[in-house]
Image (cartoon, rainbow, N blue to C red; front, side, top):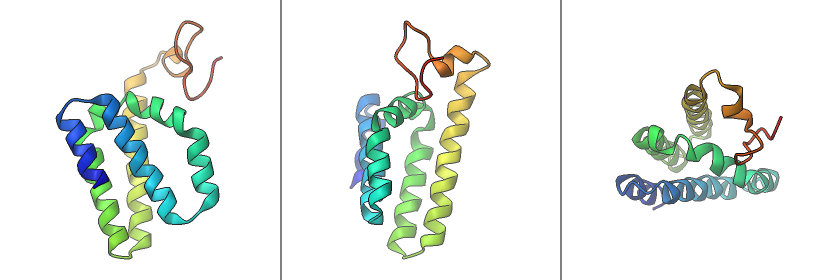
Length: 123
């Protein structure tokens, strides 16, 4: 259901809805894990993760939700090793796209006093 919601938000061109759907998906996975520390860490980083993902949500688009689908399938199959591998790959793919959108301008990553604070904070 969460993957379908993300695909619908993507098709509608709704970046805010896409970011929300992504947060819900990842939050649900953390909850499913039963790992209280992971859930608390994710909750504490929620705003930063949303900021980070919002810059690549449309670029990653279908690929991101295809990766979410594969992760769900691995979990449904009870294949924890495959799910972990797919999640790591998913994170690396998103990071690669994010870093590619930042170019060589350090202020694009670190922010400046006139912009919203980046996930890395202000310099």
